[in-house]
Image (tube, rainbow, N blue to C red; front, side, top):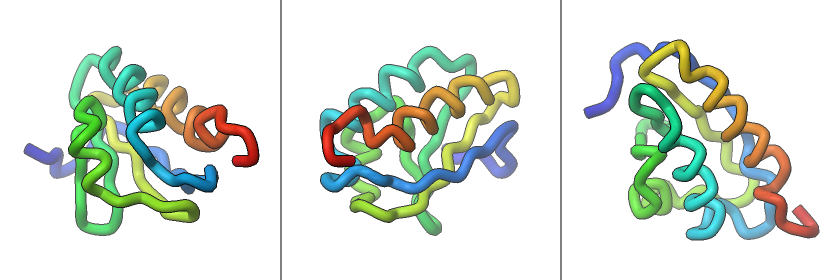
Length: 96
């Protein structure tokens, strides 16, 4: 189920050359699993559960894709910031 109005949102751009792939999705899932409520990744009209690697990969987010991180619980804004930092850092990959 997707939230109708998230408690917190953060818009980010995928900056690494490989886009959102299995290893990077696993990093996001690890962070999202620490949230109190549901965390979602949204691309255009599509949404994925941020704790589900395969669900996130189905969004097909290549380099330059803009996504919105959404938290059901406003208290999870800190989780969104941690996820955004990982994305903005190119998932720690060299050559972003």
